Image 1: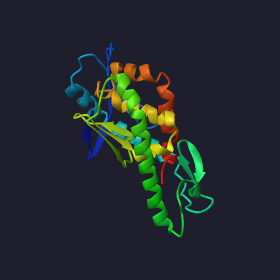
Image 2: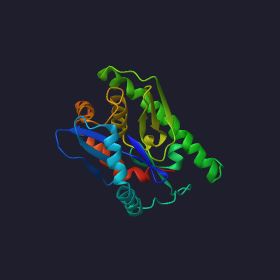
Image 3: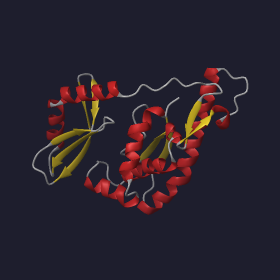
Length: 217
């Protein structure tokens, strides 16, 4: 779910349970989870988030400020770039020739886009079969905030920067988005479904929270 608050959007996941109170948790990556009793209305949930909007925004700003600033990439011999969880020199990933820095960056981005499309395309079939689902479309996109998404009309997107992550982390994002074809909210049923295919999925979430900012151009 999401609400508009003070000219910005607050996105959050909702988990319904047997508790009697509504609580809000923000993890170290800035992910917001709201736990609510079963049958709590969407209107009530959004009202609670709005009432706590100032504190939520301040917490998110604090998390962002404390994150390590990514190092400027060196598009030269000593530059190192992540690919499938390991660091490589630029020359190991693309042909550099006499290209300038902007041209090298563009070529490297195209390499990651193509790699992500290939890897996701190869690995998604296995999990589609296990879950008995089929997305309407699968697209590779550029995003600053999301590793993947699933729309209400069954269209999936994956961030091209996933090509920088280990294969098992890519698998997690694939599983996560495919499970949204069955459960749109992050409720207990959703996480049970994710865990049935990847019991250690929390380790993959932690990887993205810890190393996500290094996965950049």
